[in-house]
Structure formats: C-alpha cells, structure tokens
Image 1 (cartoon, rainbow, N blue to C red):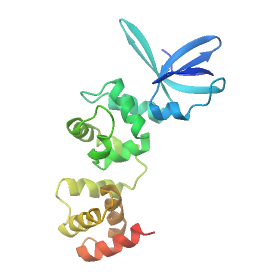
Image 2: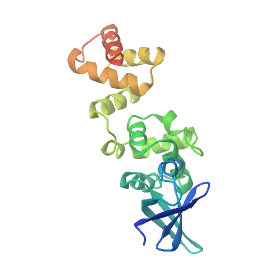
Image 3: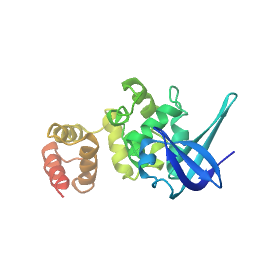
Image 4: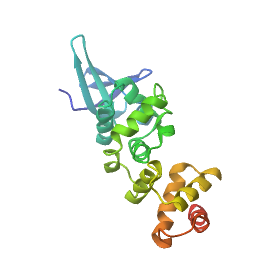
Length: 205
C-alpha cells in the first residue's frame, strides 16, 4: 500500500495530477481544492495517499494534509458516499469547515457539494455529528447550543434570538456562535431582546 508520494509535478488532468517519482509517473486523483494548491509543473510536491485496490484497478487519491485524508475516509463510512462524492465535498469545503458544518448541523453548507442532495446532507450530518467536533476548530459551547436548537430543547429566548439574527441576514452558524458567546456573560435567564442586542454587538466586532 502507498501512504505517501514525494516527487515532481509532471502534468495535470481535470481531477488528477501525475506525480513523477524517480521516473515513475503516478496518477493521483485529488479534490479541486488540493489541485489548486499544488505547485506548477516541474516543481516538487508531496501528497498523503489513500490507495484503493479493486479487482480491476488500483486508484490513488492524494491529499495535502492527513486531516483531509482522514475526512475522505470518514465520509465514505456513510451510505451513499463514495470516493467521488467525498472528493466533491472536500473540493467545496476544507476539512475544518466541513467539520464545523457537520458539527453544527449545517445541512445547507454540506449540500453545496456536487452529488449531495438534501437527503444525503441530512444523513451525513446525522451519522458524523458525534465525530465531527474532534476536527472542528470551534467552541464546544457553540456545538452544544446548535444541537439544543436543532432538538428544540434550547430556552425559547435563545431560539428567538438566534432566529432574529438569522432574519437580519446572518448565517445560522454565525448567529449561534454569537449567542453562545454572549450567553456566558448574560446567563441562561436573559431575555431574547437582551441576547439580540448583545449578539449584534458581538457580531459587529
């Protein structure tokens, strides 16, 4: 099994790069985001590799980081997600953003990837939500609050405040993060109008 390749970029295809490693050209399939970040032809590059072996072929998938490769593997544990859809997701969202979207239940962000409809996005969020926080660079309090809002167990003033911020044009993730931050100072007994005012102040920073 090949776990890493280090060589010189020989050429690019639509969804792959040919990496010349001591005279052997390896065809390595990558996400669009990874391909965009690789150097020019003739320059040195190294990629973490995931090797898929089937009866009729051997295919290599390349990643700029171990985190991207880990998400490639993780995504394919969900029914309906193959290598093509996994690469599509990683083309639209970098690993930390994908982790945050899943941890916060942001199905809309997940559904932006090609081949991912609302139903598959919902399944991805449901099945990976417990694993995503370990990879997400966000406050656990924000994740907990988003989960409470989703499950309708959050206090009504909190739900109303987040809804008001979303209606003002802020993304659900931004609104949840702002309210989770101000809740620490305002307390869970704060009224919705207080949370909205403090939330707007937090978002304006």
